[in-house]
Length: 476
Image 1 (tube, rainbow, N blue to C red):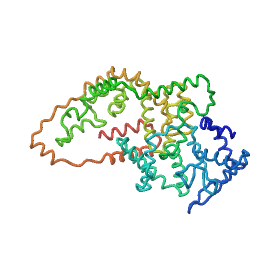
Image 2 (cartoon, helix red, strand yellow):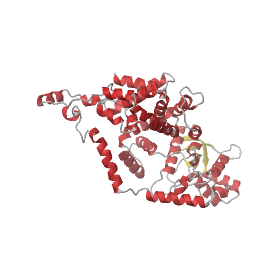
Image 3 (cartoon, one colour):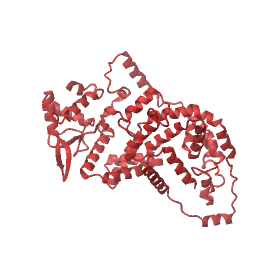
Image 4 (cartoon, rainbow, N blue to C red):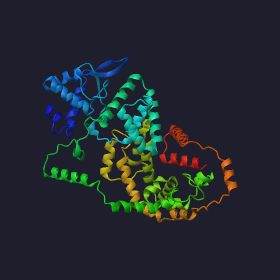
């Protein structure tokens, strides 16, 4: 077992052996002795000391203290054990330093994708807690993510505030443990500059880390193919790139208010809000430009609330509305509150995936196995495989028929083409006098979240019913 856990040539392809040792260490009778320990003035339950870990490894594997310390350091480096005091250095100190066992949800073998959005939420939460006093490298990462994710930073800050508020409601020992646990996870997966990441092991990411694969000719062939793909990936012909840019610009230039005149007028110049009114998310009669945009791609149709509502009407007539409802439910799970994540995942499974589900959807067996296995440890992206399968099904099958259907042709016929406004100088002055400040998008989003929470608290409802109620309220 020791050789399997400390193989220097292949340190990560056998995490199951390490996990077995960690599970044995947590055994109440024969494992490492844990007890409530005081950290400054806070009592931390189930804490263990570094010297107890080293002593247990020495006794269990009949090795010397140096080798036991190296083995314990490896467990800390990969995140199976996390420190409660020195968070910056992932090493095992053979003294009275306090440690705890990491929850199995964060073990490397789970292979959860480490998303930048989650890391941004974590940094935003630390920034709130520390009142802007982050570590230097964390501040740099925070600024970099802010520039990259500026389009959804309001959502990130809102999630961080919600998690911070929920954390303050916990008891202090639980709060300290959770903070240490979360920080250790991100130190493992987003290490400070100048340190070696234990999760960075090259092409072995393409291989199941729990599989003991023999290095045959096929193994080396796949390694060569993967390396060649990595070398070739960044190289794109300039003619192909320029052609793609020209095609995109030609398609969208009339829909870009910076490249084409707004109809009926630019509200920023004329103080007339007709343009915004005609392009509200759930307006009854959309404009022709808006309907035309739905034909560019299936993604454009789903991103537009009014287009999605029209597509939903088409699917209901074809008795396949459960596909879009499932996709919307997955989006709500992905972007919803963290505290309701597990309940939402189970509700989606019971509504769409379980045998005899009221709105059962048809997915292949392999995707179903991946989804069911992931639901044992629900997270935001547990349904991504099933959601992608349904998305591609609607894109390849339903979307083409929708564009040829009477439903689309009818809304295309009813769509309006506003005439351009021709304001005089006097009318522009009057418009400026009638100018009133509008509500901040942040406030509007908070009101929408509060409305969702009220609807959810009233009882278990279908997600499509919740969205339809919100859409009717926005129309009003």
